[in-house]
Image (cartoon, rainbow, N blue to C red; front, side):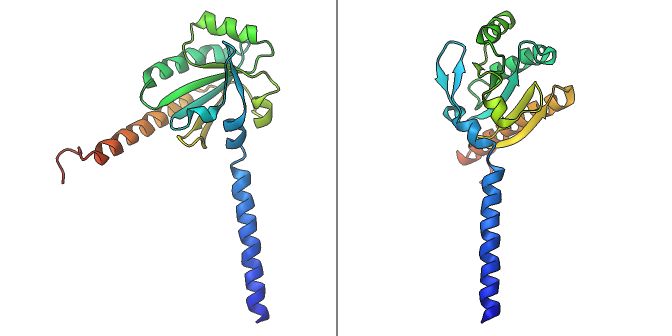
Length: 183
């Protein structure tokens, strides 16, 4: 009897520990979805408003040389993925929103550009450097990150998004019963 009670206590304790661990593992996604971001035109939004889409969330600054090289590429990705279920959101950590706007205008960026400053989401997430890029699945869960701007990691990120988009397309075709005539 005492052994049975002890086993139940251990199982209960492990269950609590597991539940707490799961909650801690998802803490990066929570602030990402709920933090209010300001677009350069003054409108506000949250990343939760993009649920259902794959998101590439890039933290950058106008003074960051690798960011200057990377953002035009991310802008091209955003254009290529328009209407396909993925997008890129660029979040400036510049202190002055005017510098972020001037940079976005000079680069002729068409992707959604937000300004959040150095004390906002970047601080909350304790990002290690800029550029810093997160990949979020359609539910807003962080499933990948790129610290810095190495060509191989950025290319791998693009391939991952493309494969996620392709996988969605395949399942959509199969669900519609259009899988090449197989019955």
